Length: 103
Image (cartoon, rainbow, N blue to C red; front, side, top):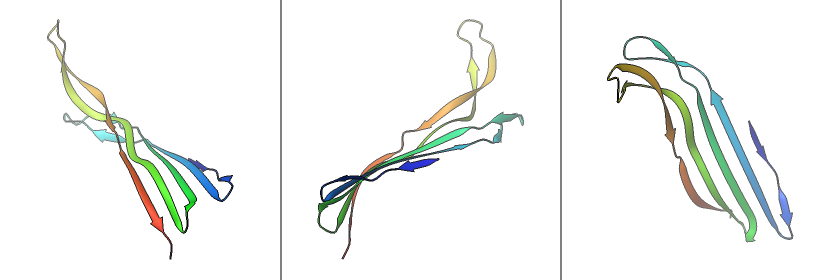
């Protein structure tokens, strides 16, 4: 799923865009059991065209991922029993700025 829209402001155009990808699968746990492995990846981008002649400036946040897919041992603090639980893992992504110059 992705969306973008051009916003014209005089000679300048701002293009905000966002995208998301959801995947579903399964992983094999340490003990051989199957566990669900859902993941949501996200990307946000803003392009600014026309602020500087022949140049597009971009600010982006990409490769962010939020999902369930790791299985780790959990020891109860009071009862002391140990069990395997699914753990949510996150990847905070990459925030960046870039300039594209056209000749």
